[in-house]
Length: 225
Ligand SMILES: Nc1ncnc2c1ncn2[C@@H]1O[C@H](COP(=O)(O)OP(=O)(O)O)[C@@H](O)[C@H]1O
Ligand SMILES: [Mg+2]
Image (cartoon, rainbow, N blue to C red; front, side, top):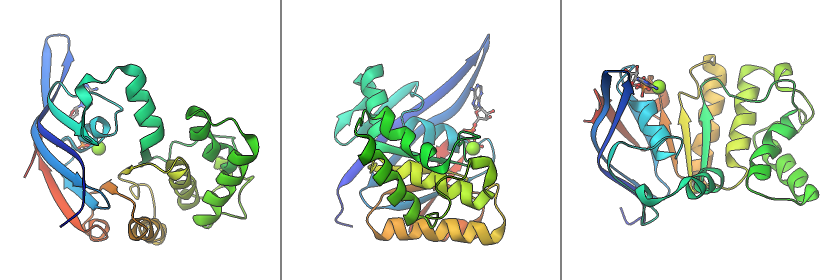
């Protein structure tokens, strides 16, 4: 493989501390992601998949270890820098969609552009419409999220995750709440995004979902096997 290294971790650990109880959730993760890869992470519930994804996506920070993103040591980043990367370079898709309720598809997709500081209203409107058309929801722009099916809500969430053209897209069990037909539709969207050159990391329990990825890694009790 001749692709550029996008990120790597070395000896990454994460402890959760609750009172006197310390839980070692990540126990030394060494991991590399190259530009354009489509990776599936599998593993038992509680093995640390979501924790790893949250750290790699700058929603959380590691306890110890190295995390280098685009050649920069992320452990030196302050809150502002972390928020900026999170908003501009990372797209997240969650199992439970996490859309704003009683808010239109269009407004949900515009939100990350607001966080990224884009002020031009016409540009936001145009880009949000295009992103929703690209996931097949051109006729649902004004529907509120509670007026959409699960599969449609997840497509809005994908459009939202992509709107700032992130360097890396994370999807944490994106088909976990969907029937098999919608799951297939969602995975076909990820497959097409990968073909267009996007870098995607997906967590799943299901081997037929993982089969859409190029590379599958397994987490077991806080380490990658
Ligand atoms: N905020 C937290 N405080 C304490 N323990 C946590 C917290 N978040 C996750 N954990 C624990 O960390 C372990 C790994 O969780 P998680 O990364 O969500 O695993 P997975 O996504 O593989 O199911 C679990 O045992 C979970 O209970
Ligand atoms: Mg999880």
